Every structure is written in structure tokens, then in C-alpha cells.
Length: 260
Image (cartoon, rainbow, N blue to C red; front, side, top):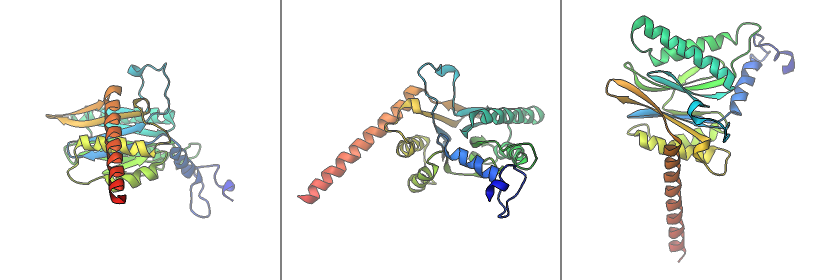
């Protein structure tokens, strides 16, 4: 029955559904995982890198995380070519606002303006929805550190911690258990991000080649966006594996003691 209504984005099915929008959401469910976490002293984005090749020049290649403005960055899950178009539009919107008002654009305003464009692509004939979901991290003078998520339908929402892409349900379930809404420092959030990715990604061993990490912090009166180097990411992974090995050894000792 759905085949009668899924060829165009502008036609509702009898159940009130827009199938092309739902298919776009399904495409994101198979994309690489991205997660974001807000801490007291910053925000971080972590993303799974699937396009890993030893011939890629790391200095000129960023697969998942994009800087939008001095106070905002984003991570994408879905069709990368669609993401390139949207991130370029985000940068233009931010620059226009900065030129007109001589101050950085408020985070939610930037997200809202892009979502208006994404919504238009679900309403007009001859267009298809953008097959990409975006996580935004930013800071402004109104609300401080912020984390937003938008999807192909044009919906968006603010989060303390969330995940998009493949295995996002398992990752969100872990974040619900592990994330503390108050008193979380950026260093703790980084460890949590590595832990969640390690347990939710479909890989046997987490390495720096598979993960991209970026942080947004305040340095005096300005924002500082840092995409972490492979060495720093690997150091975080090694620390996590050492902690896991230590916890596993302690658990085995307790089990032996209880049996004896």
C-alpha cells in the first residue's frame, strides 16, 4: 500500500505519513555514529570514522566534524555530500549575521534557520529531503554551552547528551545510565564518550583511526574549538582500556574471594 504514496515527498499516505522523510531517517540509522555531551567547562562531539584509508592525508581531511563559526561546530551522520551543502549554508548564515550585527550568531537561531530550509525540502515538489542528521555544539552569551540535534524533517531539539547514527539506541541507553547532569567536567565527558563508542560500535577494537573527537571551550572572552589529534585520541582510548582491565581484574578477585 505504501508504494502508492512513497514516490513523492509532498503526498501524505492515508495514515498521515510522509514515507520519503521516513526513508531519509532510515538512511541515517545506517550511518556512522556521532555523539555529543555537555560538560560544565565545555562541549564535545565524538564521531565514528568509516572512511579510513592509509593514503588519506589527515591534514586536509575531516570526515565527520565541521567548524561552522568561532562559537559553533557540528558533526554529521548520513550522506556526506548532503552534509557538505548544509554545512556550507550554515557557514554563510553565520557570516551574514556576524557581518550585519557585529557579534556571533546565537546557537539556536542558526539551527532554526537551517531547519527551515530542511523543512522546505519535505514540502515542495521535485525535491527530496536531505539525508543527513546533524549534531551542533556551541556557546553564546544567552545560554552558555549548548548541544542541538536536527533531522531531515526539519525538527530540532536541545540535549545534554545524545547520539545519532548506527546503534544510537544502545549509545543513548548507556548515556542515560552513565551521564550525570551536574558537575561533569570535560575530561570526564571525554572518557564517557570513548566508553560509549567502544561498547556501541560494530568493531572489535577501538582505535584513533576510527574516532574523531572535537571540543569547544572558553578561553577568556573567546571560544576555542579543538579537533583532537590522533595521539591525544589514542591516549584516551589507552586510558579507558587500562581502566577496564583493572576493573575486570578486581571483579575476578572478588568472585574468587566470595567462592572461597
